[in-house]
Amino acid sequence: MSRSLSQLLCAIAATAAATTAFATAELRSVDGNVLVSTKDGFMVATDKLRVESGVTVSTTARGTVTVVFDAGCEIKLEPNQRLLVRSGTPCAALLASVEPIALAPAVAVAPTGSTIAGASLLAFGASTGTGIYLYNRNSRNVSPN
Figure 1 (spheres, rainbow, N blue to C red):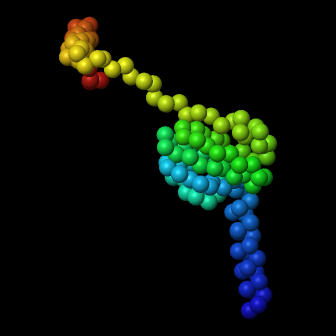
Figure 2: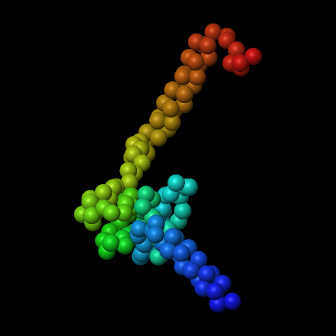
Figure 3: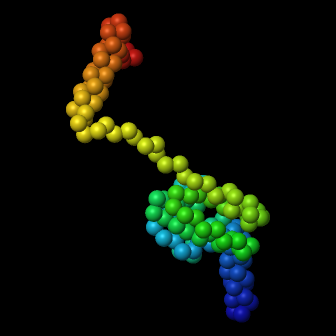
């Protein structure tokens, strides 16, 4: 009985060691929306989540997180930043690899007095483009039949 118990404990210890062997860092002080991208997709980050080398940690507009590497390096990500987690990389190189996340380009908004004119121009352009397309189609069938 004690031999099978010791074998079971050894198996549990080996599984735990294998599970943490690939973990490179831990996420701490997760605040707001923080995402972790893996080969399987995105997941929402939680406090004390262990991450392995090769994943990307990204913050959104209102998210912050501290990535604490097993080697002792701590990197705080501010809103709209991302970091590729890499094991065996010096702290200075990891800090330098923090990237800003590009925001969507700003859209020009017409002053309130010309909103109707802008909408009319847009409608005119869309209808003209459609008309030109239909005219140049030369009565060809659209379907593959």
